[in-house]
Length: 330
Image (cartoon, rainbow, N blue to C red; front, side):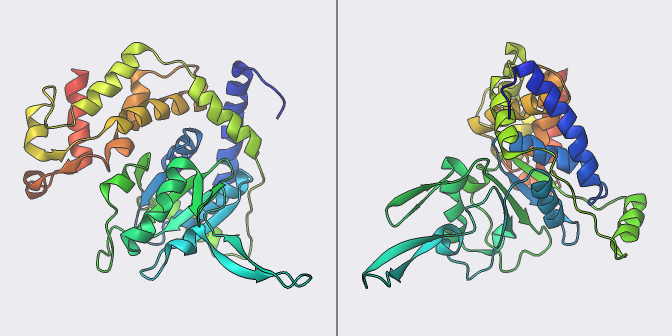
């Protein structure tokens, strides 16, 4: 990509987003908000957890996005017998036919891609789940004492089925915190489902064309980091996150009543990064408080742990976040 200044990059991203929506819309009907949030997470160098029942085109959505972005797509089906080496790769003894000598050679696992789909991540034991931790945080893999750097951009999207809990291993909070967003993939509307059935029961296939290159994505990711943010916007984000902690003096009474543990500092960072990415996707050079509010539920959904009182009263994290936003806006 030719060297562009930040204003030109901003304009290029806005135009690319419109083309991207058009290309993805040829394959995926609806789910625009989810697609936008996945793109925000990618630009913020975060990772996404997608929660939804089977058959909502989560895999197809991710695969289509990878095609439109010219990124290498890798799918890992998480099962109870999956081993860490099945994700990161393994060493095998290889013989040199010319010399007869044998040596270990590392064969890279499916984590060596750009967009990694960790399908039904909660179906595998914690030891295997943890194999993704270093890759997600450090963008590298260590195997047999050697460190291998992952290609950029590197983006993990994990899926979970909210219905079946038998035979699953809930993700520990430490791993959940590595995900920037927790996204709820919902059923399509009646009109969308009509269109889905019409377009998927024929012999015609739609394949998206490449809209953004890898180099351009990396440039846009660096642009997000350079976006300036007003002090009052950062203050709002930190106030919101601090208010989720029942031990905090700033926490409202309903938080102390319903919350076991609140969000950590990583939530504040992701609120601001997400707000920056959302602003530039809409062609604005700096985010406002409204951008932070838009990021609040997907960022806090998996970071606020409701207590027994909340569960008994049917209060979920989205309800707590909404109540917090209303109290801060007063």
